Length: 210
Image 1 (cartoon, rainbow, N blue to C red):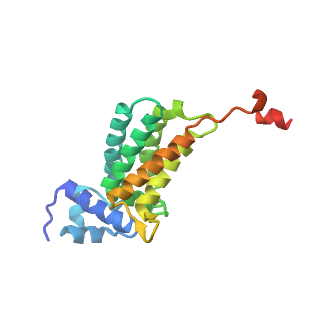
Image 2: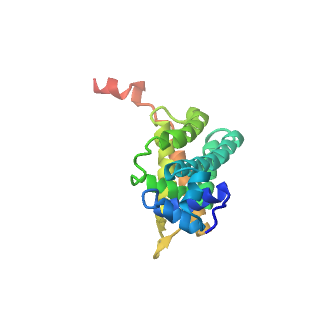
Image 3: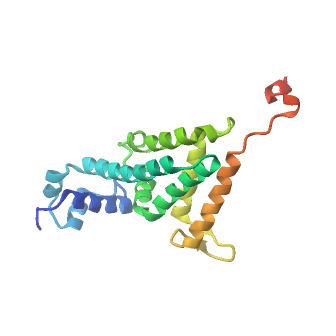
């Protein structure tokens, strides 16, 4: 086996295996075997498995951040801005299933000893979008829960699909299913962005209870 391999090829090969098997299920030897090199070739270029995994997650974050920063910068005004940002998020993960797979493993306690990655790589994206849409969110809706609802729905659909009405499942590899799901997300976000109706006679619920 050759010991000469580009750094980015190592990272891309590791990302594929981490996405398929998770961090805990991917020994460094397996990555080396898949790339046709010795483990020493990987550690000399990138570092140990932990360092390699952090770099894989960093690059996944950077790819997603690039898309979301552009969507936030280009989004229009009002609820349409939420649609545009949400569409960019959905389209990114439809086009990059490996990114979703990396996070899906983490959601089932993969690489549990690397617990800081959510704060390092997920929180900045939440903060970016929350700052942009915060003024559109009614006071009775938590902005982070609204964004969480979007994330949960998108990843749930991409991971499992939806029941088709007559029979079987509609998956994310079906463009028509993606567009149908997109319309549902628009409706869901619109409902969450509707301000709460004022109570009768202008009284708050707390006053009414008193």
